[in-house]
Image 1 (tube, rainbow, N blue to C red):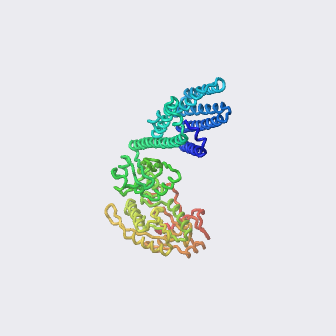
Image 2: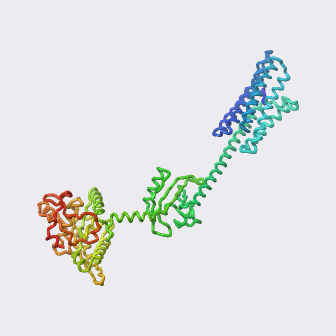
Length: 577
């Protein structure tokens, strides 16, 4: 298909060459990322280039004939290029329909036979009629193959592009048939702009095929995504665990299964009004989860404390959270497991390890560990602190008179009053028997004495009742030590206990402060030896495995140390309580 006239005029040639360039770039665009179009369209383009070059060879042959020169070489080149164009177009049609190895081999074999025929009828048995017929048959066969190939795909994925190309190649094939049978003259069908027009229309059809292919891929991706979403929804519905899907962008819940609806108290008809963050009882807990998701994209077995609109009581869940694509959006896939009972057991075990079983106050071990930490923080911030040591007055008489059951009531009431009278950040612990110890952060000695007096008065107003409904009143003596004395918790407790002993000696139901002057007496060797707890020992401590130690362990002449041997308490201090 072509016209040799375009080579006779420079402007015609440039226009046709420009159209061929447009076809080249349209082939690049149409085949980019499209493996199903790459082979057929480039074979088609190569065939077009060969046909264009065949027209050029025919033009050179006409020029040579007019000059009286031999034209056999030009005719051979023209027919060879037309034969190759036919082969490439046939291969393009085969690749477009189906990549069939047998048909490909057949086309190549026919091409070899065509080459032999060209050589025979030009050089061995020259026959101008046969040569002219081959000029018509080779492009006609090529375009017939293209027409058949594109019509076969016109009802499939490349609808619009295939239809246009099929119509275009069919028209050219019909024109070539008309010329072959003499119905249409060469002058009517060989005008110069036919090749350029063909290249432009073919470029348009290739772009349309690319658009059709992209549309087909989009539809396929949409179907796959719909199947994926349906699979996710089915998994969510069938899961025995509560599952919620929420958008990453605005945190809105877009899907929740029945178990999640029941667990979180969600109205399934109004999912969009809920946000996942609204269910977190601890904002720091949610912030940690968000930070980990940004780094890991997938989190398993993350403990979260949540609440619901129907209840203010928080409960614990074990969460596994993934970032996934769902319904054309980026979402959080969150699966939960209720671990409230497990956390309650853990908290119970933890409390048993750090709490006194009778009063539920902290025990001595926890107090010493926690206060050590708080003292380090207070030193870094240059803040004061104080320690109170409390002891129930005449507690042995309560036990002897009313029994240990009433003694337990006294200790419980004393502990409850102390917790109620002090701040939330104050630490109250049962240190041993009827002795209690308190750590007051941010409090110096004078303020500590004020707090201790207020606490002593509150305790003195309390009353418990015996089994016979007799009222039992009780008081406490309190010793105070502070950061002005030491930054060692053991030393603070020992010096507060010494101040407590002084309060006992001075009449009980009073507060005494361990001062710097008292410390100088210790340094000069005038310390008071530890008191014996055996007479006032409460039976609840009989079950403790820890060894009883003296509060003034390590008080030696000139220094206070944690490493010195235990000093036995004299009988005069034993009887002071």
